[in-house]
Image (cartoon, rainbow, N blue to C red):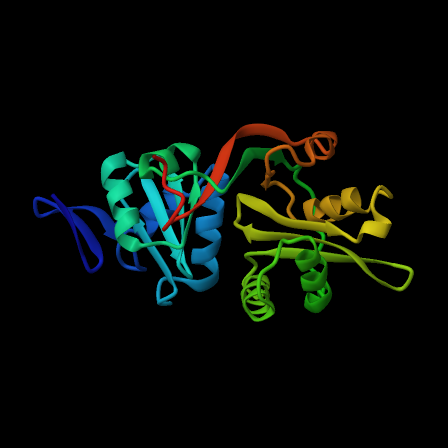
Length: 260
């Protein structure tokens, strides 16, 4: 039977899912994070916080990468042994689990949220510099759209990621005040994930959403930009911007909502 023991997960004494730090399997983790939106999210956490923070931990089994950040677990790749991966995730007791829908099915979890993974390769050109961002305005706009949690956690995380080049953000004004915001909360050298887009209701359908996405794209030339669209939302908007569906994502509460 599998059992947890500190940094490793064992079956019959052999470590299958292994802890990652700077000296141990960091290269393997980064390799597994290439080429997917899930991997981009994991790699951006590592780029922002490294391997020495107790709230950000990483593991790999050689074919999948796991990242637990503040109790939420993200999976990138395809687990070598889905049953072991499911047992490992349950052992961690993650409050939320995010990744491919198949992994949540292996865990027996019913997704609370799901939708298509969209992707858009961006042309290579001179990048637009990340300027200063009014994070309070960004927070207010995203929170009003249900895209931000508590202020302190939002500020500490996004400001840290911006300083380390692992995020991009843009706030636009109209009539002398902030009315729209876009954020790519996960950025690596190869990819980025558009994690938040909000426009004040009175200013919608005026092209601000498109301009915000274009502004984020201008900061990320040569990368693949991913968007994790919720089911049934904004399909035509992202299609007009050139995004194409390449897969699916799902998120579940790790402790409840089990199937069956």
